[in-house]
Length: 232
Image (cartoon, rainbow, N blue to C red):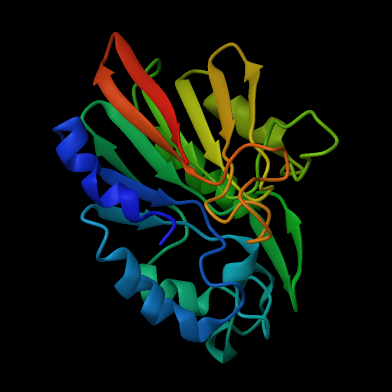
């Protein structure tokens, strides 16, 4: 219901539309993965997903913390529905990355951070991307908020920034239900985006007062790569 207007974006912008869900897809209910997949399949666009803290199986820790993954691990249901938590693809000359920055301890306990395995994966992925290219990084927890009210940053964001500095980077994050934009480095811009559900369905605004909604990003030209609008 809240993203129903997105079905007409292709007609408005007259170009291919790609969507990215920034996590917290099923609110800890593993039985909702199938209906969620069905719902987003009706949006009229190619949809990609990433993991939030509410997308892990409550019974298990993250796979990197699990001694016997064959017995179950936190990402298992997500993997079965959407594939790996870390992946990338190209849209023209823009390199798009989705990454997990939630380290899950089980039973709704977690830390916002990139594991060493996550950062190693990103380092290898970026080795195939020419320096100076545009990179869109999508994560759940933000990395650069500096207001106390928003918070929620990944603990080891500086390690991330070191890998990203050679590129022209836009980071898109969720998690906080708080709209905030930051420039942690001259070539890195983070958009912490408000939620379609606002302050957890409590009204028509996010925690910061921005209306419920989602971000629309237009790729115009390599010399003017992005235009942004927030749809409420």
